[in-house]
Length: 514
Image: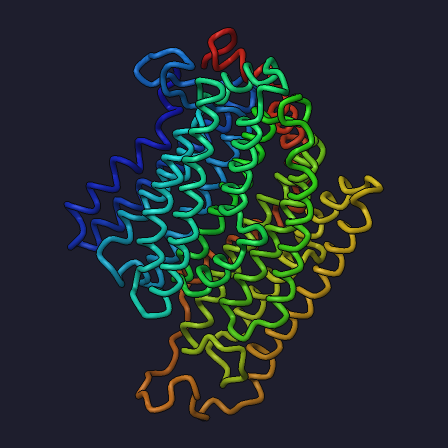
């Protein structure tokens, strides 16, 4: 076995309590340990991506217990891609939080940050559904702590809503696990994939219930209609660096749908054939519409960014709902793009709001480096809206290309094109108010957002504060430039995901174990 496979889970799991108990009163030590851990995680992720690029499915047996009796971690191209995406985003967000001082507004930011990475990496690597539930709960606890970082009544209210919705999802998750185990006697993904095709349809009623409950749970995590309302409220009120990290959180739900409902409940399995497609597609269309309208009607900058994330999830899930290798390739490209686009928007918005001292979309005196922030916002906005030349344009083209079936083409294309137009108008309105109209206001006019407050003039952002957001925007350009090689890798990733027999033989011990 290759012990590096468990490293993305073990490293943050060991680092978090050390930071939390030993370094919580020394921000310098906590920062150094957290950055070192994130750099180590990125190095490990690069190594695992290189290991998985060969096309083999590598399995790590905890305690050397064979599957399906023991706990297994599974590394393939998809899990390696998601770990690398998580590690890259985490380092960018962490550097922004340190440079802007967000991490110093509470004692436990870095410990919670590492626990969050542990939960995310564990969810992407786990080889059984029960441990997927466990890592979901780690995510919930750590994300709630990060959500509350810095305090405030609005943040408390949004955090409570976030927890209630996710606890309800966790309850349904347990019901689904109970039904699935009662029907099959296992929760190992590979073992389920081996047993369910042999199960007679007349004996699969509980399996169909479990499959539907799991789809609902993952839809809650992915913020799909009709439970999408938690995302804008949570992301808009969370500390901006935390919201940027949360850009990967909804992708955990999308990943779980791809992994479980392709490998375990695939459309070619008689017991669950035809279940996910129709309603998931409809929910994605409505989610996209709600997000686009929210962008147009937003009255706060962070609220606008949050609704744009919701719209991007709708677009992503349109491709996921097709459950074909070609659609999965498009979904994965758009997933990578939308993660960096959302992070860029949140980081730029944080820099702007901190200097305007007002989150409202109202014209105020110009801030220092107004042109620089306008350029960064423009780049991230056109990427999120899907305009050329950045990766959002190519991502939406790929999604539209896989929606050419006559039964989904009209609705799918209309949702994407109209939604993109509405998002463009919303971003244009916000950008013109925040960056263009502000230049017409004399700098010595009182800021209505700080009326009665003796506030010091806004400081210029230094290189360390601007670099993370700029790197995200540059990454969106790189995704467009290298779209060909990346798409080739994602095609291989999709083919491996749909190779159920190869996954089963590897995990259950009849193939490559790594």
